[in-house]
Amino acid sequence: MRRIFHAVLVSLCLLGNCSLLYAADGEVDFLDDAFYEEAPEENAVRDPFEGINRVVFTFNDYAFVWVLNPLANGYSKLLPSDIRGAIANVFYNLQEPMRFINSLLQVRFSDAGTLLTRFTVNTIGGVGGLGDPASELGFEKTEATFCQTLDNWGVPDGIFLMVPVMGPTTLRDISGRVVDRFSLSPIYYNWAAGWEESVGIYMGKEVNNLSLHLGEYEAMKKMSFDPYIAVRDGFYQLRRQRWQNSMSSSDAVVEPLE
Amino acid sequence: MQIFRRVLVVLLFLTLLPLTQQVSAATPDPTEQLKPVVDKVVSLLKDAEFRKKPVVEQSDVIVKIVAERFDFREMSKRVMGKQWRTLNPEQKDQFVALFTKLLQYVYINQVDGYLDKKIEFTDQRIRRDRAEVKTLLVGADKRIPVSYIMLLEKDNWMAYDIVVEGVSLIRNYMEQISTVLRDEKFPGLIKMLENKITKLEAGEKEE
Image (tube, rainbow over all chains, first blue to last red; front, side, top):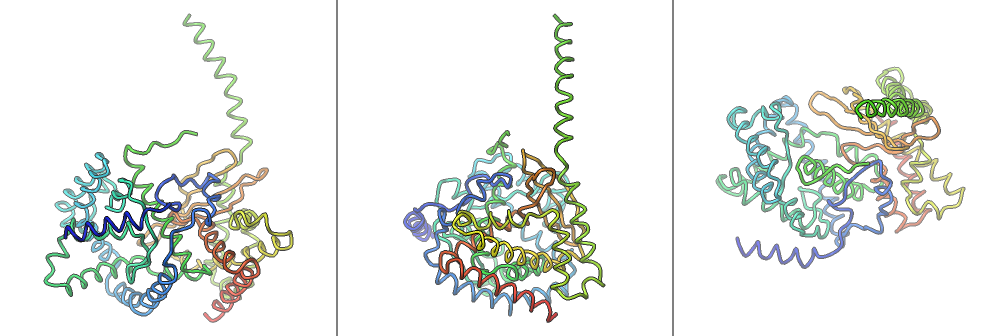
């Protein structure tokens, strides 16, 4: 295991040591023209494997249209949305200890407190995380992933990758995700009786999540003339926005005064 | 000393009061200006009679309403980025016309998404001549934040970007356009836009 980590870290340093695009750093302010003036060519996304990525993207598109989407559609008809929401809550709650550790690694102590409270309240009061009573008590959801931790520690983003089934990511983010999934939330991967079961649980989780976001991908595809680029840019924009939101709740970021 | 201070406060108050009033009177309220237009479009789209009309006709009606509060030229300029300056006036007009059309169809294509949802105007912020009007699309099982980014042109707030769940539409198109421009230059871009528009027109008719 240690060797794998070592390899990942070395490859991160080798491949990842390049200029970032408009990555997670820098505030997004839509009232600021700078956001629109970051010319895409200048901060070009590091996408040396664009050719391969496009092939994977086409594969994912087929997989989505012919397998994943029909599955999620049928599933969404079987179960009402509040039950699907509760299932999503359980999966979310299982990741909460990992978020707690990551928030500590990112020196976000008040968020760490919130996350610990959320996990305790939702596991006990929300019956294993089916409900989210903690939010109602004012302990709002906060994101803290190992990808953010790596970013915090100065590990660069590296290249853009399109991963089969999983979708868009970067070299750093996929390493972060692997760490989050396998070392910090072992509950439903390591307790499964074999890889088939793990895959089953993973697919269940993804289909359940997708059933709550039906139609979003199609809408996006319909309105763009290069869906691959649209997805790539959407991924970076969404991530920057999410990280900014999760950071602004901590003491690290001070709202700039006008 | 205390009296002096009190007089000073009163004086300050008196001189500042008209100033603040002047500012608020001079700047129109972006939400107040945008809301009627958005409401009108949504109520039209919810109208079954209207939706029976051909897509091209629908979009003509809608673009007239929307053009009151959306600055399509500003959108086209931003989406082109630095390339805008390299275009001649005819090319600019050609691009604006096509891009406006594309945005229209994008807007109408969202119809299904709006049908079962309610739009709430939640917040706004103004900085100099820019404003962000925040809305929330409230559906049965999800809430999608949609922001309109606006520019003050004389007495009118005009939208030049729509931000859905933190993703800027203009920024997203900008990235796509710069790739097409890099590989296929301006004629390629125009052809691509035309293809997309024909597809959207045809695709809708089939339904």
